[in-house]
Length: 295
Image (tube, rainbow, N blue to C red; front, side, top):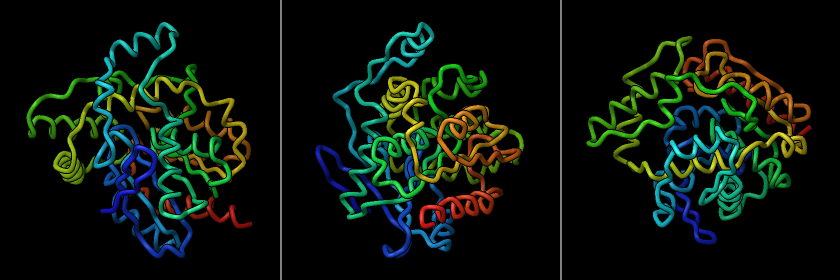
């Protein structure tokens, strides 16, 4: 797969479809590699008229790692958050949003539809207010505004965020599958075989916990985006699962309420995942929102 090189960064990416189609940039979430955007899902987007770009965020997959920054103490960071203290991080969501634009610029795309899931939704939101001239439309999936007054993850989902990884390939894979099961929610059957296949592929492609911790630190350091999000003017779609245990659906409601003109699409039974059972609904909604950019 190709790499886009700019500044001190190398971003691994791949594409689906004809470059003459509508460009759609997919941004994945915390610690997740671009392969978490299912190839079949990407292909279905192509069928809807999009040229799809997916990529590894910094510090994950095959993109640039920041080993020199060390690994943050997550328990200490959350203790600081609880006390209302300012979090210092090696980079923030602003930097990750700039990476997304750096990638688009490197592959000669001036404007794109920007779609992000979970932390990727936070990055997509940041792109929308930080680089508005590059954004055709915004899709924020199972994400939030960073508003500290919103509900927290369930206790089980919180453990997924901060639990230390075991050692050894098989133990790490089992922990990964279990984490996916917990955040999947209970409204749609959990496909363990499909989840295990993804976890194995991710481990074999790049097993890198330190980057996960630095990305989580970036989220905590970036704080509340509510005020900045009021400046977004791109057509915006907010997709959220009513059964999300990791980012409760109030996060989606707050995002849609904050961004002028945003449409909120709550999906019954959906947790913190994008299972194939809901793809058709999500694809329809993304296509409809994107069309507003050309009206």
